Each structure stands twice: as structure tokens, then as C-alpha cells.
Image (cartoon, rainbow, N blue to C red; front, side, top):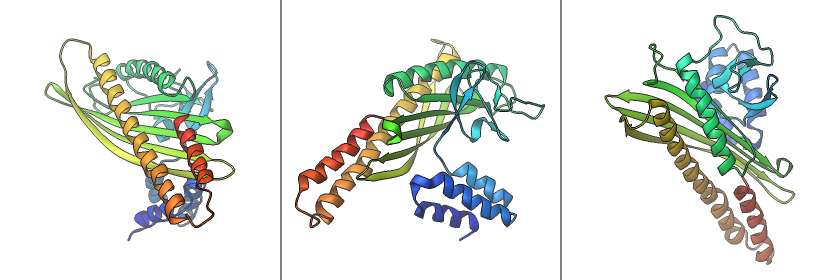
Length: 274
């Protein structure tokens, strides 16, 4: 097993609630061994809870990830500026003007989605980047991010949707990789972990609408379906299995099954609140 696979295997066995700290510690060890390329591969492969930065131009918060990062700076989807340093040069990555227009509309659209599906709370951010040289909407990639916390941090939900759009004739193929990082905790019990799934959809473009609207509708439907599927999987993996463990494998620990059921219901309510 090579160092990359060994690193992934180690991270899978450590506490998922401390994935950011564990990843940073591991990268520090690898950097000391001059494994800079391996460190970069790990940082781009491991999903960690999203961080928030405020855009000082309009006092709006936005989410940070590797896809809007340039060194220690992060690009705001609201103003297309980098923070906190806000310094750029010829090497600083920006989407093309055509893609930036779509990025603005995507942020507006998914902010409405967040308002509807996350009960008017949380933060969303969308970042797009060009994959073609002709600066058209025939091929591009992007990421849609959502983050929500409830009850003083007792419930945390981070969803990361990375997608690629590829044109084939009059059809457009949408490839999506969705990762959700979930953490639920209270004084009695704690659950944390993540799930990653891939989804794909192909749509035929007609002249009934413009290409921007066409992409936004298809991406919105694909991400909506992916979050619905992931949420159901999380409930099945976390809570159905938890009930089996508590009520079957550990049923000899006391006889008060009502109290154990109440603990499970508390965690389920936490998921439902996200």
C-alpha cells in the first residue's frame, strides 16, 4: 500500500469529528518528509467542514473551499474579490466573463434554494471555472456549497456538490459528486461522519429557453435529488443502525428501552432540523 492509500486508511480510522485537525497534523508530518505533492493530493481529496469568511465589501458571508482558494485568499462569489488580503496578480484565477454571469445567477438561485430547503438559515456559495478555451457555456465545472448549524453547534451539516458539464452534440451531460459531512452531538450521545455519492444526468438542449436558464434548471434538479437521496441514506446509516445497536446488541444494558428510544429521537430531530 502506497503512502496516499495509507494516509486515507488512517484518516478513515480516526475520529471523523476531528477530520480537519487530523488532516492538518498528517500534512505537517508529510511536509517534514518533503512529501509536498502527496500533501496537496490529500488536501484536494479529503472533504473537511466548510469555513466562513466575510466579504468586507458588502458584509456578506461566503463559504471557503479549495475551488475558490488562491494561496491564503478566498474569492467571494458576491463581489468576485479575494479576501482577506484582496490582492491579485496575473496568475490569480477568475472565471471568464461569460461564466461569471452564470455564477452570479447561480448564487442567486441557490440562495433561494437554501432559503426553502434549509428553513431560511445557513449559508450557500457557488463557484464556477472554465474547462474550455472558447469561454462558452458548452463546457465548464463548478461547486455548490451549503452549510448550516443549529443549537449552538450541536447540529452541523456541510454539503459539497462538485459538478462538470460536458456537451455532446445537442445534449449536455452533468456529472455530480456529492459529499455531506454531518455532526450531531448532545450531552448524551455524539454521531459524526460523511457520505459521498455520484450522480449523472443527460439533458437535450432545445431553443425553448436560453442556455443559462437551461443549465440552472438541470443543475438545480440534480442537486435537489442528490441531497434528498443522501439525506435518506444518512438516516438509514446513522439512525436505523444506531437503533439496532442500542435496542438489540446492547439491550442488556438496563431495561429502560423508552429512554434509549428518546435518545435516538433526539438525534433524528437534530437531522430533521438541518
